Length: 357
Image 1: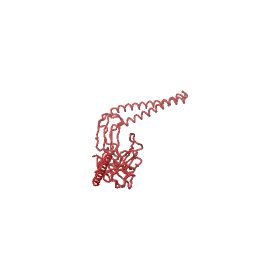
Image 2: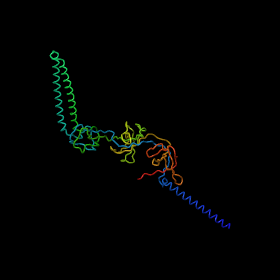
Image 3: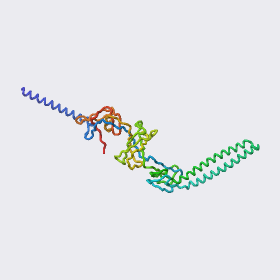
Image 4: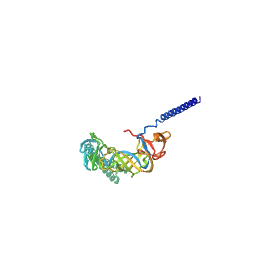
């Protein structure tokens, strides 16, 4: 009987252990299911938390432009007559680029010359009348009022003559606009009227640029502009020349932010070393302005930082490949890096999603 009791007792203990193991397995399964949103296959995605000296930088995306360029505008209405230089061709200062017909201008010029001559005749007549009225008044042949009236007529004639001469001079100056010449030595980089037959006053005609010095005309976010100052060094890259880093320097910072949903301030960088690359105006450029350095900074990829209702966090790797949600304090996002103020130490690993190819 005691042997049978001992056997039953052993079976019961086995059953208890089996139930305990079953419950433990179910608990682990439920835990895995609960952690499934944050537990991922981390092969190749775990990034090492590093302590290093960080170069602080501010993004300034924009376009490459020639440092020296001039745009010529029309100073008259007229028909495009002849184009002598095409886009991409080199020109010398004063070289004829195009001609605009002066048919309409010549008629206007004739009318202005006639108007000026009429004003001159009116002035001469008014002056003679005034001189005559003065002599008659001195001889006491007419009252003083007649002299005053003659003086007023002379004043109006003088003003009319001055205005008509100015108008004539302005029209004569437009005659020079019939022959459009280059304002400097360079290359015609843009013909704005290649498809136009009729040119209006003020219309952009051509842009001439010198292609030996370049700038980046970019934009800096308003949240970063306080860190940017003239003279700071910059690094410039172009999609057209992948892998090449050009040197630059901040030359000019706009006085106000551009209007729009995202306020940005126009910023101009001089390219100080183009490495001999054949740069072209209007190429897209990505510039980073160097604003300082930070020693012994805790750095992780910026893509590893997540934001929840309780603030920023990362998914930190534990022994066995488990990932836990680790709250962090981010000091600064520096390009594709996040500088961590608290929450991580060098040598740990965090999940950093890879960009899709």
